[in-house]
Image (tube, rainbow, N blue to C red; front, side):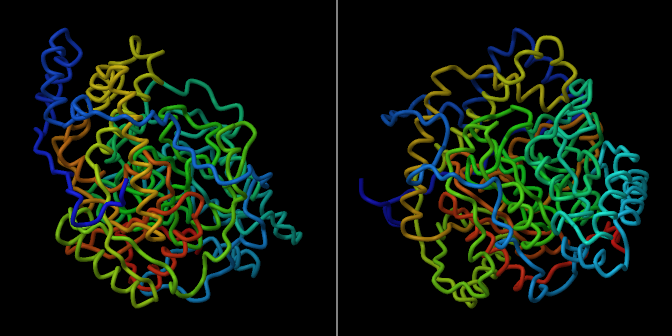
Length: 567
């Protein structure tokens, strides 16, 4: 098969015009979808959303059930990045507003300007204040005050004795409520799961705890991770610190809001279709989704096993690199994570981009709002001035990939929740009930066709990445949408906007390739805009290197809602 060129590949992603539903019309539609009449509605809905596309395609490739990328002999890797490769304080901060970073906390503790105990009290007060605000931020939904203060006392003692566990010792970190963390239940954003506290930390949480991180509580999320706005009828809709009348993005909505509002410099999130990168983009942060299998999934709710990734949302590229350095690497309790080369950060902080080639598929890059495209184009030019080379590429069959991802993630989620569907389906939010009703209508043939399409997409992206080091796009097709009053508190169904939000994020989940979102600027209303980079398997340092270069070129703005918990 010849490599595609920009002249021979037809760009096939399209914007969709699907009905918006909220309030009484939404409740009526949900009732119909859960009635015997759904058999009449679903075929048209599938056609309108393009879901039937793969049923009409002849795809001869064998299915890829897990997007694993093997590289030579299986390495006997350590659990994390070698300590000597972990980032030190940035040589020069980027322009504009400065978020308090992990190293800012570490320095303040070391110099005696504050203590983890003082920070813990400020964080607890800030969480309380943020949830009492009008409107409430709802970033953090579960806090065990005594547990937080106990962690802080232990951290303060280690630091006084000159034995901090890592740069994270005493630094606040929030954890998405999709991950097990003692002593909290894991609700996955629902109103009925998590009846009892977790008995063991998820591996990523355990690794942060081993580094001394001050685990401040559970962060809110879009219910079961099946949406990308952050609207949650059970725990409250998370508000965007840059504009509280706007969504944060999801499903890692609480982690993004917690970091952007200054409650912590790093949070742990999960990404099955952009759920780290989308809220990072909407909230002006750095969000990293590593190569499939790079970060252990042990202790995460098993929602979508072949597209799921865990990773950090961070205020800065350095903070994202530090968190990645602690959580990356094999874990015997997650067999998929054993198939990876040793994790590294070597070269991530090289001060220039010489030798780095950025691939741009122009029709895809420009399929976003004018302000998003303009900001990403300006940043692309800055990256060129920093030494990078830009090369135009083409990637075929992106629409097949979009549909394959929808079928894959929705079918896996429906199956993961099948054990409780009959008893609890009406306890989900309205948008979740629609999505699960649609997902349960997929057939075995739909799922297998999606995995055949996945095989083709992996080939298309890997061939493109033979020509370039990374592929760059906007992170989202638009900036954070306003929260419609009609959507509160029960929810909304806005599939047209969802498609615009997710246009650039899903290929990295389907293919298992690493991807990152980092700030690219702001729109006229002051809402953040993100740029995405997709890299070769296991090349996370290259993505972080690009995010660091962008950080030095883009002036950051302060959020409307920000708590200075470092003091």
